Image: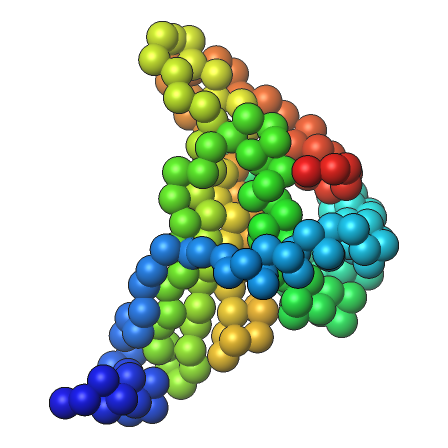
Length: 195
């Protein structure tokens, strides 16, 4: 079977449900990095972050803002998801994924992993681009977990953004210091400054 046939079969032949088509490290090209830097300098990114900030706080009081946001709150994990909507372009979703990663790096986090997984699922193609962020390495307890381990995921259906999710999971072990407040993290993430 030729390379073309193998690619064709993966993309166009009927697949069993949840067939993994591709799973690789998430890397940005030079062109994508330049586009991201241009986006950071653009007023559009500032306006978008302000709208997300406002929508997040409205949602905390059970009011829907311009941008639809879902909140997740539990004892061991906190997070939010930004659903696809007319206020956030497809391009902006990709840039927000990278923006949150860079903000976390600036807060002292380290990138512990990244991947892009493409799956054939129930008649559509699901792509999940993900960054996994962890606090700095520390051996001696009590270990500073900052805001916890953080996963940032962009879910796309047939290459169209469905939602962007950020989830912070904490440790409740005596070897770790008490985690910092998730709402404080949200403020730091949604306030645009130089990266």
